Image 1 (cartoon, rainbow, N blue to C red):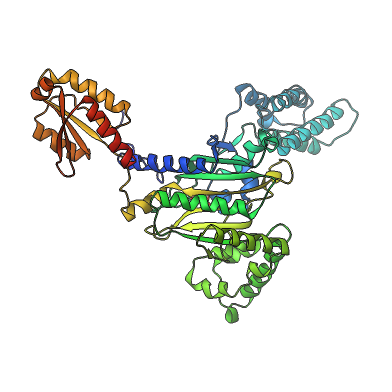
Image 2: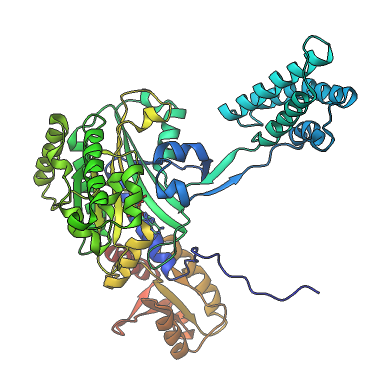
Length: 534
Ligand code: AMP
């Protein structure tokens, strides 16, 4: 008999239950409406992509790619596995014996062309590594064949070594596609932009997405392994600072609409491919000096020490209290921007002032991912503890080209962390505009039933959320249920109402009660719905 066990959601994932799910839907709907009012349009992307897409765009040295991705190797078709086994199966029988060798060489000659066809057909990943391994198998097979024909003389040791190398190379072939659950979606948007030739469409492309992302981080409040983002990207030929400013304006308009209070916008410029590398080198030099003279300069922790070589900008992200005095004295990028980047940043600030957007400059805002250039930004909110960033973003002018797309395409975008935005709204208790159950219908008596079914259908057609309990109920009990469910109104239908062709409408907040005929009831509740925004 199987053991009785209870299943739980996997660590770092969670269920979003009613009534929270209504808040989520409303938040996402408000985001869609706001983004669409700025002429952004939705792109629906796959949840998983080729691993290489993220490694190349986000950067191999980042935490996201290095430690946090959920990657699986897809299963190749069965016949492809069998082709490989024809070679690897020789592993246990390798001998410097003509008969054994003949078999191995024969199998290599038969199987390699089949594997090459599978690469061509897209059943096996077309990677440089796979091509190298297949070329190696062919070359070693040819040497063994020459030996068998007496055209080359190999020692027993050489024969054994070549045979073994062939078997190992076949074992190393990656037959299944490496796929990763997306840790973010900017790379996917760029991949889609390139794949569908969107650079030929008129104007800048303004796209948004809504959906789950996956990172293997240590779960805590506001940090999950499956979390949700709403993101927007502008891709095209122009990198005018007005685009950056409009994206930020849109973001803040959305936060205002959803009642996300007490947010702070931080901005920075991290330079371009001309000035940033020089600054990074300068920073690295300074950090090395600190590492080598801790007694005079102050100490860096092990993470920052490691980052001096791999990604010195990330040292600026450090939150360790003992590193703060050291970091405050480091050279600042704002003093090392090239003239074009300085001008871009200054125009961005003018554009923000024009739109009456408040911001704070934060020279340490470098963001974790490799692809950012020039403008970077982050929005923080209250009520979230240490995970207080609700949105991050920036410019990534070279990313499309880096991913094999056309040159000259500029990009800017952001991702809002929906989980955190909603947590912050909940903490602030600012939920007054949230739609919920509008009407509960209470009925008594057999004649009331068809009237109730009919009016429920009409109210729902007007866009109201209506609960019609399956059983009749004493009116006192019905009103108490309506209260518990959070309904705003109760429509009461008893014998009197059926006889007179009317409805009794009760507003639960203040017990206001009125008697209305059908068209008056529909008109009244519909106008209430419009007025409440529900
Ligand atoms: P990033 O893609 O790292 O720039 O993150 C953008 C936003 O997504 C952050 O500001 C957070 O609000 C949110 N976010 C990132 N990682 C997580 C996570 N593990 N759990 C919840 N929200 C996250």
